[in-house]
Every structure is written in C-alpha cells, then in structure tokens.
Image 1 (cartoon, helix red, strand yellow):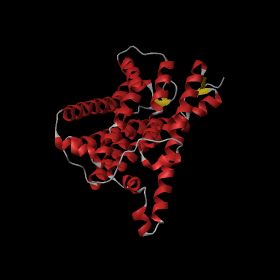
Image 2 (spheres, one colour):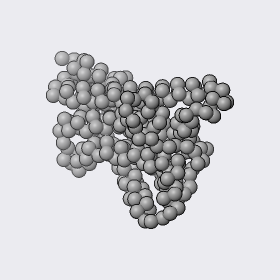
Image 3 (cartoon, helix red, strand yellow):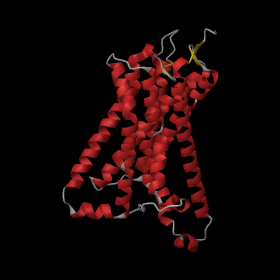
Image 4 (cartoon, one colour):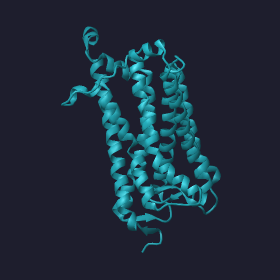
Length: 313
C-alpha cells in the first residue's frame, strides 16, 4: 500500500452520497444561470414595442433588480462549495484518501473553505437586505450592494489564505484530510473555529434574530406594512426570506457535528458525511425555491405555480 494514501473503508457510501448531492447542486446552479442568461439575451433581441408587451417583463425586472444581485451572490458561494465537494468523486474512484495532501486535496480544501464562508456571508446579505426593506422601509442601492459584495469576497479570500500563508507551521500542512474530504486538518483545530466555524455560527444566529424581528414587526397590525407586503417589491421580499431559512436548515446538522467536535465529543465520520450531504444540497434547494416561486420558469412546467411578483418599486 502506498504510504501516501489510505483506504476509504466504510466512508465510501457516505462520500459517494456527498458527491451526488454536490453534483446535483452544481448542475442546478449552472442550469439556472444558463437559463437566466438565455432569458435576458432573448429579451434584449426584442424590439422596444415587443419588450413593452412582453408578458414576462416582471421576470426580467427581477433579473435586473437588487433582489437578484443578492441571490446571485449567494448562489456563487453555493457553486464553489459544490465544486469542492464534487472532488470527493476522485477519492471514491481511487478508493483511497490522501494521507499527504496533494494539489487536488489542497484545491478541494480551498474550494470548500471559500464556498462555505461565501455562502454564509451571502445568506447574511440577503437577510440584512430584506430586513431593511420589511422592517425599516429602506432598501440598499445597487452601488451599496456591490460594495458589500466586494467587501464580502475580500474577507472570504483573507480567511481562505490566512491559514496556509500565516498560520501553517513547517512540516504540518494546514489543508489536508479532514474526515470524508480535504479541509483544515485536525492539527489546526482552533483555526477551524476562528477561520470558519465562528462565522457560520454567527451568521446563523444573526439570521435567526432577523427572522424574529421580522416576525414581531409583521405580527403587529400595521396598514402601512400590509400595503407594502401586498406590493410587488413586498411579495418579492417575502420570497427572498426563504433563502436565509434554507441556509439555517441545511447548515444545522453539520453545525451540531462541529459543536460536538469542539466540545471534545466527536461523532463518527458517517455522521459527518450525512450532515455533509444535507449541507451540499443547499445550492439545489436554493435553485428549487427560485424555480417554484418565479414566473421565469412557470411556462416550462406542466403544472401551475404560485406566482410572486418581483417588480422594482
């Protein structure tokens, strides 16, 4: 047996499930974005009169709105995350895991680290943006959103590069085998907390707080709020609330696994892989929510969907 590799053993089925889930998310995201690009380009080819009479104008407005900016940012993180977990296919095909991290292992670790934190911050931005609209009757300008997104990805890059560039000790790789995939090795357990876990937990907590504030605000009789929710932007805002909720639901099992490990009571790798399957389905779940709440794809399906307006207001 090559000393640089170790058998997958009883992790094979779990890793295969993670690969399938990640591939499903990847294909869903790529298909959705491809369709959106095709949709916009088709609309641009119409004459001014045809654009004015286009029955799908509201869908086009959503694709050029601040809502779609935050949604696309969220999905970009999901995309990188799914690519990272798809690399498990390489270990399943070989039926071995790398004891010593190679380039493929390092790439997987980086993609997972970047994708996880980008998805977290993307979910946070969606939640903050919708809270501003529904609770404070204020919406960020597109310029502000672009600045927030630029800052977000700078922070994501710093968190991903800080480990190998600053923290890594001689002879002890920062990225390497971490259960059923490559990520931050157990030699840097504290860095798993400060470069990753803490941000995931804080984002989930802030999202829960925002949901509580929104629920309390909407539970109080207020004609102005009722009118706003009945408007097109209000309807779109209600739909956008689903995405942070999807993040909380999909991250919960893996968060429990990580909390147990930090508390000194690690669970089995099979539990990690099961939680990983749910987490890697976040991209697929977000695309499903989009498909079933947007007029954009309603005409392609053989059944009637609930329509949510998404005009700019």
